[in-house]
Image (tube, rainbow, N blue to C red):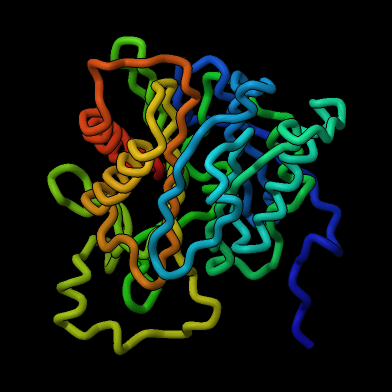
Length: 327
């Protein structure tokens, strides 16, 4: 008789809140980031709390979510404002972590149920079951723990939080992938702050700025182009395809600069499209990619418009992608 899978229900799971190197330090007051993991998975979640925006006049940060690929898992992405955003592993089950974040926000607000004080926590998930033999997922308790651990100024990178078991460059037979994780980059331009964070769990491989594969598509200790694999028809020799490691890349860009809704939308689309330079292929039928473009609306910068912002943010996200894996 086969040994039953480890699950959330029959194991006393303990959230792990350890933050280790590598980390990115950033200077963005009011933006708190927290992680929590179940090492038994491994799987985890990463939360972004927009602490400075929570007033009755301005109940949350404004955002636009660009959703692409054939298999996204996302919630509340149409609302356009949020108190926090949660990224998690565990496929659709991992969206439960968002409820833990919302529960902690409700507690922080003295359980107020006034119309604009009910917490709004959009979220998105990656499929991280493919390389593990259990059904452990980020649940409400893990979301609560990530929120309680959140702090300003530090983003944990690599195999931490939602990136605990992210993988990239799996190829046609899903047997040539490498472990990736979550990465981030930060930049200031005058008074404008830009924080870019991403969880890279893509079917495609990661490429550097020269176009060279640096993570994924690994065959006999060499990174290969999928086009070459396709020409050789190697994918016809695929092995066991049970519970394939599906794919999703989750990205968030947070700025303090105010943008109109249409500008937020176009920046999100511009940056999301640019990511195909760093992840190849991107937005495939087996990917479910989501990008949140968020503004806390603290400053106006008429010298730095949406198009220029999109160019800078696109370059910054490429840095975040290259920071997502540990060497």
